[in-house]
Length: 360
Ligand SMILES: *Cc1c(COP(=O)(O)O)cnc(C)c1O
Image (cartoon, rainbow, N blue to C red; front, side, top):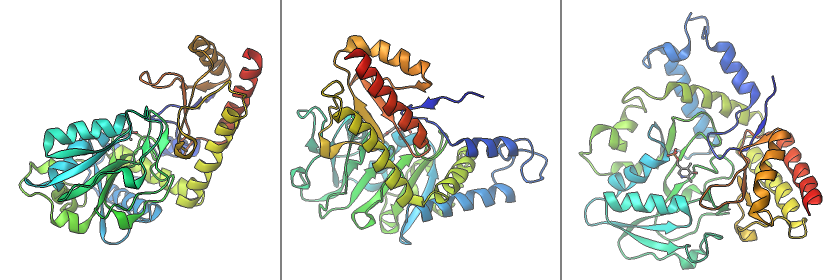
């Protein structure tokens, strides 16, 4: 077996321990004579897995009692629409922060579903920083302000949530369980689990119960949060495999210090790569402003795009894959989510130093 260091932006690497345990259980789950993914989602076995994953997620993310946790499908993308459909009755509005490609996409979909406005636009800054709280416009009658805590493509991150005197809705897809959520400020957070927490197919929504109670009624059944909450996220067939593997990943995270452990890892490991960039005498440059640098997506450029192909090929030979940046930004991106081993980051740092010496 020759596993590479996979820096993909998502889906991404999972711990070998989690993959091996999943493999070992695949043909015969707990003596049932079948795999978990061949069972009814109403079976006692799956029910236990589902309940366990919900509890572990709640505990890992330190979700307060006044919030409900929902397991949904459709990715973060469906939440771009479901959030306004559920939280914005006719006559209300919400502000959207366009901090990067994902914030922009969230706003574009929300506009199709309800009345919204642009609360801050980072386009002119080239999406190299997040807004200061005072720069975010909050119009009278605003139901919520939507934020993207980490812009996966541009590699910029909010270090803390702003206090805006209106509830926040936050897309935490790419820094899920790598930094704490300030629950006082939010009515809802959502994120796909395929970056930091497991396989694709599952989206977690955490919603304040009062927001759930006030949510828009009469939506088609899948699109309303209330129905999912009432059914314990078993309104229809859930993404069983993703829930099951996420449960294992959450145990893996617990064994490594939980949220605090993951936050420490993210700060330390991104620091290793930013130190290489800053110590390269300008060979590597990071477009993100230093205070806004993402701890999960480290974006950097080489002195010339002509070197990109060679960098990627030599990295590949060294077992370091999926480092190409998003086509809209160019350059390189190292996504270092929760499951990336420390050794992977150290190997990349060593490779980058050597490459700069050889090419510089
Ligand atoms: C990946 C990503 C999305 C899209 O998620 P899907 O699950 O593919 O819909 C949305 N927002 C952010 C911040 C992301 O990183």
